[in-house]
Length: 213
Image 1 (cartoon, helix red, strand yellow):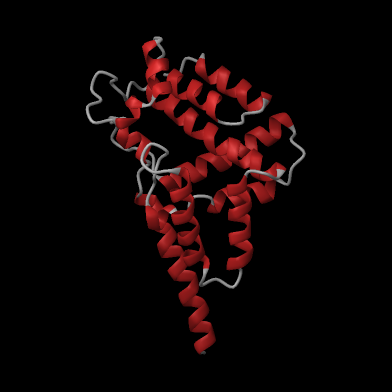
Image 2 (tube, rainbow, N blue to C red):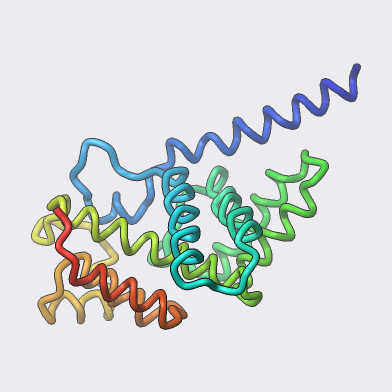
């Protein structure tokens, strides 16, 4: 009986902890003061990036294990249930990786399959295998596309960005000073910083010139 109770406790402890992500609003949208009744949570981003992965696999026929990708993406943000959604403009990459890896190890520690799930998380984080690199590109592009959707709704006023430290980034300033809109800046920033292959870049370019109302 005690073993059963322990398993039930493990299930609920993990579920309840991960459910926090439903209420963690993506930091980028808060930094840019997105004005909208509902702004995307981390959990909604996880759903969006999984749907994007299915579409990219379908249309470009990548030679990858898509189920492994979906599993990776299901857990790629679980550390944020503990540390929150930290952006590259708030914390160094090495420090964030350390905090996130510690959090993921703790979150998964109560599950029998925890080591296998953690291995998938670490594989994603390394961006080296075909599945991990594909998943990583999906993760970044999904954020770009959500930005494009918010911009199409007119949710961001670039003239009202007091306290937004992201605007001090040299590349962000360069792109905005060149006349790029908020979402054009975001898409171009990602194209310069992330390892998009020709297909991800094509979707990014298409989104940049697509009228979204």
